[in-house]
Amino acid sequence: MLTFRTIKSLTQCLRGYRAAGLRVGFVPTMGFLHQGHRALIDESVTRCDISVVSIFVNPTQFGSNEDLDRYPRAL
Image 1 (cartoon, one colour):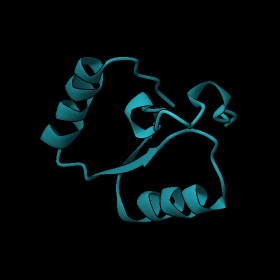
Image 2 (cartoon, rainbow, N blue to C red):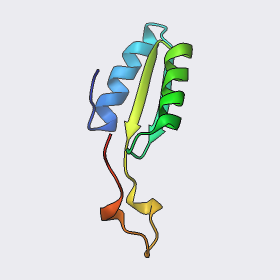
Image 3 (cartoon, one colour):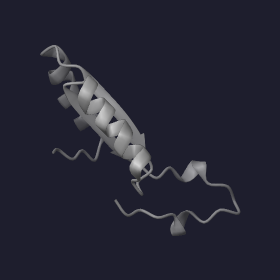
């Protein structure tokens, strides 16, 4: 498993995989992984050579009455 903290570093790595002809799958999440995420990850692993799972809590997806700080981030 590799961990990337910047889009640039991820892009550089994926460029190499694609140049080698590998198929890359992507599963976007906001953390707090559940069985639905697991099903998507399993499907990506089945269909693709490389599977990328993002864990990004996007503050812009929370309204003014929603508490971003209390959003669960457990994996």
